[in-house]
Amino acid sequence: MSNFLVWDIVKKNNCFLMKRGSEQFSKDPLNMKGKNCFKYSGLVQKKAIGIKRDRANKGIAFVTKRCDKLNKPAQTVVRTNFTRGKRRTLQKIRNFMCKQNYRRELKMLALRRASALMKNQKQIAATPAQPKKN
Picture (cartoon, rainbow, N blue to C red):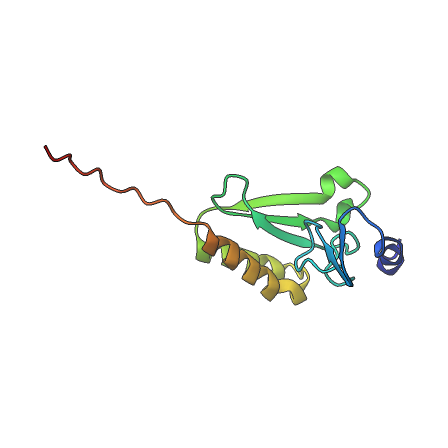
């Protein structure tokens, strides 16, 4: 089915839609911006990405949608965890989006979101135990 036809069907009624006054937002995990529009919708696009916090809160989960498995919903979404470092994570996201021609218009949005999520994850530094004074 065409992306535009699917969008006409799901734009006003889907399980991820939130209506707040005159605004419409989306909770879709593959929606980068949270807006209910054709450009950012992960339901509609054949290639979609999402960046989330890792389950253990130790890194970033990079979620992609495979366009060769669209008729098998369980195998469509691929989740990759990046935990090794901030620069390395951003470089891997950049390389994935540019070298594989994977929606380049969302590259800066994805990098900003990953950077913001990594900035909020604080490293717990081990403080040395101080001896008790008698």
